[in-house]
Amino acid sequence: MALWIPVTIFAAFMQNLRFLMQRHLKVTTLSTAGATWARFLYAAPLVPLVLGGYLGLSGQSLPALPSAFWVYVVIGAQAQMLATMCVVALFARRNFTVGITLKKTEVILTALIGLVVLGEAVSPPVLAAIAVGFAGVLLLSDPPPADTPLPWTARVFNPASGYGLASGVLFGLCSVCYRGATLSLDSGDAVLRAAVALCAATLVQTLTLGAWIAWRDRGQIGRVLASWRVSGPMGLTSMLGSMGWFTAFALQTAAYVKALGQIELVFTFLFSVFWLRERSSAKEIAGIALIVGSILLIFLGAVP
Image (cartoon, rainbow, N blue to C red; front, side):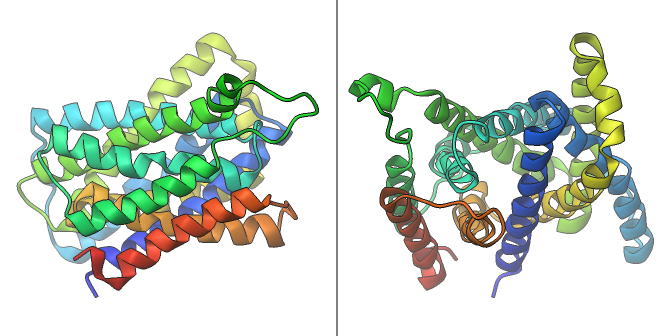
């Protein structure tokens, strides 16, 4: 089995745990921006420790950081930050399972963006797997039934779908940019290049969003610091998950990584049912089944 496959599964599981804790912060104490910043702030001290430890264990040295690296990192970091805010805001619109699933528009969008930005095409079997998963996403794009019937425009163009699509575009962009950042480094193995890119991106995100919060909602800073009991473990899962994603991007095309990363939905569904005690409608379950089917296509050999 290629290394990027177990690394991607690990990253998806850690990301699911992080979103679960981020959801708790959003619905209890923090604003959308505060819950997003907490993720970066509490991960920021951990990433340099991982980088330094790996440098010592592997005997490698830091690679040179070309200008292309910083272009990819800055664009990717800002896109990821905004995408995370979209997902956190989406949690207030739909249940946890549907919120994460709507985010999965990123898979097909990552393939398109990767083709445009890096010239990386995907094979027909992968496109088939992505199409099956995207069909499942479409089943989840309707808002829950209302007492008053809504016109079709309101059913298709609703805030939940908008947040999901926006997060998909932005997560697709950041995935491709992060792969570009790791490929721009001319030395170091995949883990080292991933750690260097993650360290730079986390620094950019912590400083950028922290400055914005200090300007617009300074009270959130104290709330984020006071939330350390939840935000601390969230930062750890964020760092572990991000290291997994960045390493997978260094090893494989971003579209392939994100296609397999849909396995996160399985973890999300289990958490939603057995921990959060949330219920899903028949249509939502059908959408989830299609996305699980796309994962099975990948395991059956769609992705090398």
